[in-house]
Amino acid sequence: MNKEVKENVENQQETVELSFWDHLEVLRWGLVRIVGVLFVCMIIAFAAMPYIFNQYILAPTTSDFFVYQWLEKVSRGLLNFSDDFFVQIININVASQFFTHISTALSLALVMAVPYIIYELWKFIRPALFDHEVKHVRLAFLGSTVMFYLGCLISYLLVFPFTFRFLTEYELSASIMNQIDLSSYIGHFIMLILVMGLVFEMPLLAWILSLMGLINKSFLRQYKSYAVVGLLVLSAVITPSGDPLSMGLVAIPLYLLYELSILIVKE
Image (tube, rainbow, N blue to C red; front, side, top):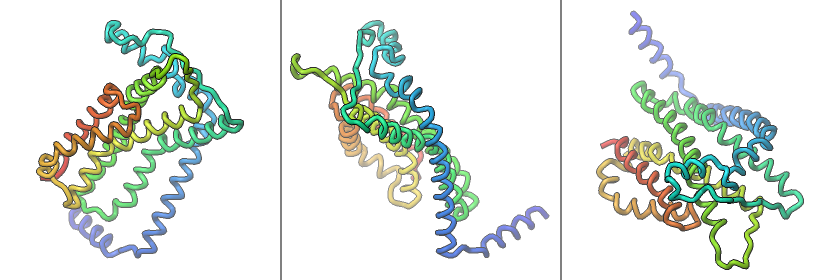
């Protein structure tokens, strides 16, 4: 009896088809809710920004940064991160600190709202899925959220600190003194965090392309050598410092993501 009721409900749902304008209306209200959540997250981020800026965003500018201290202990002194490393961030524009406060709060709000954005996207495409697809797509969206935050975390803990230290300690001439502008610092910081978060969505993109029939396991394995070259180029773009250590910190996770993509795509 339960099976018959379920089939009747499914048949009724199939007969109720939304028009093109109905879909646009659903999408519009979804975007409105996303903007509302972003606005709330931005207010929270704006209020907490002075603390976040001092404790986390500016942390890699001194040798007290816990990652530097940890690497010093793990490497048993081979990596000299315990010296008096200190970079003073300066401001040369009158309104720069105010606009940096706003732009950084907006970027943080975007990072905070990622789970809700993905949830709204899930709600929008859910009616178009068959029952056997729901579970896989739900797991994919959940995985994409985890991978985004993992990419942001790796960038904050490894990619950005190493890149920043290399660039600030690089010396073309002893007579040149580095003075890092606030806009330059925060722009580099946000760019690396968000780009690494997006790059870690590679497995989800590969899975979607495989569902569309555009790629498969054989394709990814056949062109792996070309992909490695492309990933190295991408690593060089993400880490403009160009030093092998920073590139390796980006290239290795990207290669592992490519291997993960091979595992999850269809045959």
